[in-house]
Picture 1 (cartoon, one colour):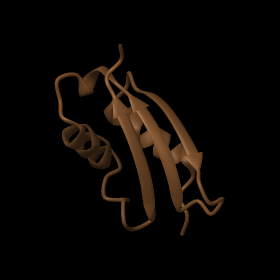
Picture 2 (cartoon, rainbow, N blue to C red):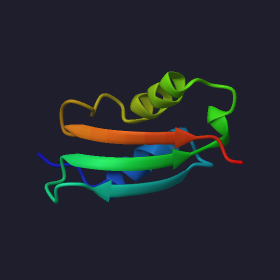
Picture 3 (cartoon, rainbow, N blue to C red):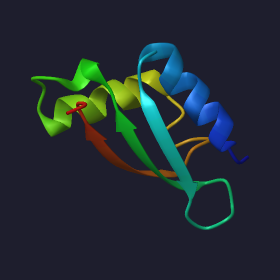
Length: 77
């Protein structure tokens, strides 16, 4: 079962309310997305820690409903 981009954005926003999020469906199948997430919560965190915050926000959907998510994360300038 596919996951809508709006659902991905909703879950991330729930965990990171200040986040600016850009999501692209890479294959048109609802299973392969790329996302850019910018949040002050990432300040001072490593790239791995930033990605862990996003994956935690997805509440276990990665690898199940959501097959692939290419992430780019950063703190705001």
